[in-house]
Image 1 (spheres, rainbow over the protein chains, first blue to last red):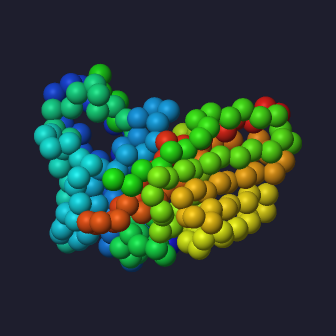
Image 2 (image 1 turned 180 degrees about the vertical axis):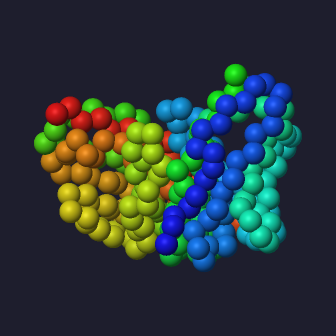
Length: 116
Length: 112
């Protein structure tokens, strides 16, 4: 049973370009979360999605960032017109059930985004 | 919102010494989770604590949840170089969608 898959593992973009980060949750998991981690810092929640629905996007910047989790295919985190401050590691996690008392999240290997 | 303060931010020990990291909250927590992230790696779930005063052990790791459910600790006995990494606590932020809120982590380095 494959774990959470993320690609690409490393992504380099120039300022103003678009970045697309993909996440395939573990088999049987319908809850997906995206986190951002700056160097030497903790994980910051960005968005929580279920299939075809955004449940909570309170941690996501209102401009340039969007996320989706279509009925078929991986979850996508899209960053338009990237700036240097977007350089970070972006982790996707998935869980079988909603985030409640008995549920752990499984993390993917992350995408390291570098904006030149 | 529900936040957790994690201390210390960094800890450097000699191999064989013990290590402890603490998480503190101003509000009562429903549960707390601990994750470990190796350098260059991704967070890996270690354990979840739910009950007041709960103590759980995993080999050399001891996890404790305070009686008031406002603090938690992770203690490693006789550290090894394989223990190197950043240890995060995380809590469910209730209300709304209930998402995980992570502490800033304690980065552990072990000198062989």
